[in-house]
Length: 110
Length: 118
Image (tube, rainbow over all chains, first blue to last red; front, side, top):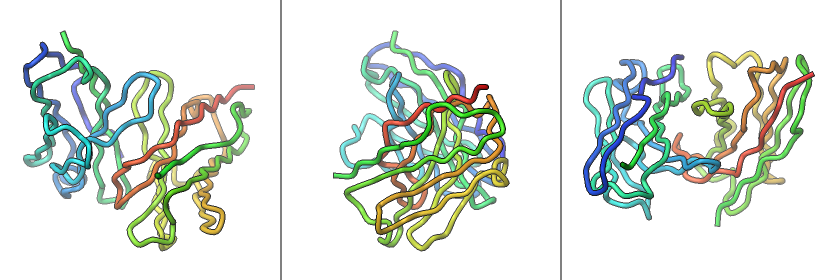
């Protein structure tokens, strides 16, 4: 099972919107609506930001939104803030009845 | 309040078997839909999903590591144990356990760094 493909880095200025892509195959992202997104600050455990493609857990800012089209899922952060600077990972259920993470994206707030 | 904590050796030798224990509180692993999973992260690298055990003892493994992994649970002790055989230096990583609701990890332990070196 290969890792899902994410851009290595994405940057934006405060207040702007950015989108992180997560590309898989029809055996994972494209085949199931079980895509999650995690935020990880340096030295910390990951935090669930989006589950089931577009749902936000309680307490997560509505500046974070998720979507999917075909084999690619996306995480959009609107109104970018300094605290959003972190690594972001997508995850998907797979046809092997397992899960796979993405390669990770470093978000920089300029 | 849900908490999880990983425990186990910080240093293992190549070819040895790693045994990690996840001790949790604030939920029961006998509740429908609940699971505990293991995820690792080599220093400076991406997350890698390893295994997941559900409330009904259904077990899922990473296809690439399946032959080396075993996950078990002790509901009475609120613990989940992961064993990984034939450890190699490339297995050096921070190992996390996390509470899962159908594959979504909403609560994570602090992680434990395991170094594989002779």
